Image 1 (cartoon, one colour):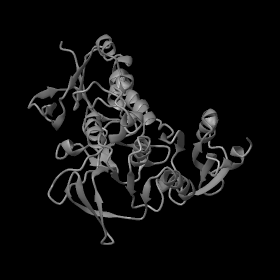
Image 2 (image 1 turned 90 degrees about the horizontal axis):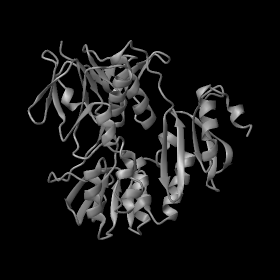
Image 3 (image 1 turned 60 degrees about the horizontal axis):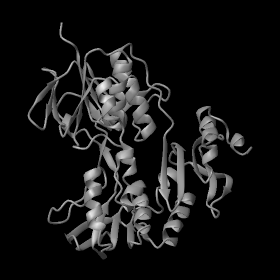
Amino acid sequence: MSLLRAVVVGASAAGLAAADGLRDGGWAGTVTVLSAELHAPYDRSCLSKQPLSSHEALDSAALRSPEHFTSQQIDLYLGEWAVGVDIDRRLVVTNNGDGVPYDALIIATGSRPLRMATDSGERLPVLRDLDDLAQLRKLIAPADPVSLIGGGLVGLEVAAALRGRNIPVRVLDSGSTPLNAYMGDDIGRWCLGAHRAHGVDFRTGVKVVGVSGTHGDYRIKLEDGTNHRAETILVGIGAQPAVGWLRGSGVSLGPGVLCDAVGRTSVRDIWAAGDVAAFWDPKTSQRRRFDHWANAVEQGRQVGLNVARKAEDYTPQLRTFSIEQYAQTLHILGTRESGAVDVLVEGSLESGRFVVAHTHGHDVVQAITACGHDGRLGSYRALLARGAPLSDYRRW
């Protein structure tokens, strides 16, 4: 009897964790991981940090060693990505025209950056992978001014990294303050002040409606009718689940790949995990999609285990991410919902050492944003996990 075949599409944090989960769960068949990149899998979250301001290799950011793939008998195919899936014949169709057979398929394709193009169709640079980083390093080598369209997480870290090289930076952001949906306006204003204090020409409340020209002589057109000249442009306006290759396949899509609490999609033997997965959370009776590292790793592993043995519901991990800028790191724990009230529970924004609780009705704390209190993050994470009231956060 032939061995069962598991195929993981995406050598992401979720995809590799799923492959490991398959083996840890006792999957005795083959495990194949398809990677769209030619580079060995690495930590993409490093791209907008220190490597942008230097020419250091990213070897230290490797997600798995070659020995790991060998010992776990995981077949990794670089430069081979899925362009479709035939659910009747149970084949993943790749860019090479191959049909990779599967008995279990795990979708872990993550998300892709939203793109912009000039009026003539030239695609503007984004920062998503190592090839993007290599291109950006070449573009900024002359140290000409850089215009960032979008003041999100990538934009903030890139701006700080470029200023570390004394490169002039302009940020054009449509929001009133940076990342206010995640941190609130008070911290957003503090963040904005930090960038301006380091020489960033940070403009808020501006909407880019078009770009003309070419590298070295762009014209950025704003909604108010004004134009800004730019030598180099980097776009960071968000991302969306990478599901284009699944359209028309029969796999149900919405805000990502729709799946149940254990990771099963609408098609038998097809599962999803990580940024791309919109899974059902029985605790909240809502469909949820998380785009952060801890969730990708934990959910990927759980889905791999679920494929290999009796399936168990996935318990969402506390949303956690950080923003590095100017020798300071902002840590955001949990999810700040619309309408939250932001309460300072420790320190002060002026000092750059603070903890802010994001609350919503009846003393319920949804999330925490902290700067300069790294040693206490574990305690705050525990308070959030047990649903502690705001008064408990004030007892430090």
